[in-house]
Image (tube, rainbow, N blue to C red):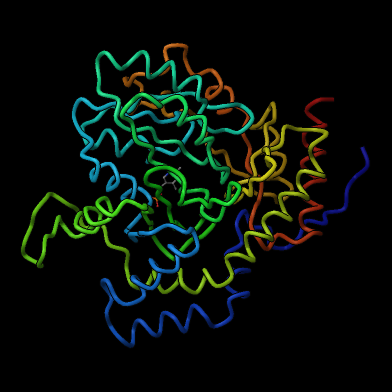
Length: 384
Ligand SMILES: *Cc1c(COP(=O)(O)O)cnc(C)c1O
């Protein structure tokens, strides 16, 4: 083997938030200084401004900013009165949040398999899970997850649940900025939620989230739930709620970042395209269906000997991540909940093969060429 010169770029980040900060110039510092100056740290004017901007961006009537993507999911289920005896259908191949909120409210998460191509909920598996549970539990909500930034197949999910009184809660934590035809993430499902965790496509400098809906009644319940179930005045409490507010500081950060977000979404398409061109003959790459713009929260390939490939890449200075090493139905906290009676074989296989590569809007061409070359070398070595 020919000895290679180490040409690894000095700072190869999985997600480069400092590059984004440079792009923003003084915008964030100025926004934060503004909040310190006016001092309205809780529900300050930036929160309402952010809600308006997000509503305009996603073309949704109501946006309720909140403390995290997890709170967003939980508040949506609370607004619909989900509780004991209710079945909520969730993919197993997702982050714990998507199922955790269901169990916390006393309802039953029912785990559904995903499609191997899209990593998203498999409508056929949903149908089997629905058939198997409806005698024992009240089917109430389906939570499709827009895995890695690709919106789930909402039309197919709607077809499966037609004839049932089921609602769709879109877990769009990873897909804000994505679009399907004329619709943007946030406008899919009866209620959609997102997360502003720093590593998400639109991230703040801490925890944050938002809930999107066109339903006026749900909007007013959500606003009440966000502040301890408040009624018409501060100490009028009409329902059991939570402290689910978004900090004004985080709203200010998000307003600044929104000003470059459209450009970042375009840059992500360029980065994804370069990975596709460089890797598609060698490994399974993620789909980018016609008419859909994914948010590319992650760029996730499938490789055999995943752990060995990841180790080789690490040795060459390339950070990677495994989302997710287990399905939720394989986790100790969730292994007693019902699943699709046919099992979840795709989830289990993906958990062994997924590998997410560095992905952010500022990934330069030279750096990316290096990553592609090293991924190819690592995969080919395993196959030799
Ligand atoms: C990140 C994430 C969440 C939770 O968001 P937090 O803001 O961290 O609470 C929920 N669902 C999915 C699919 C996520 O990726």
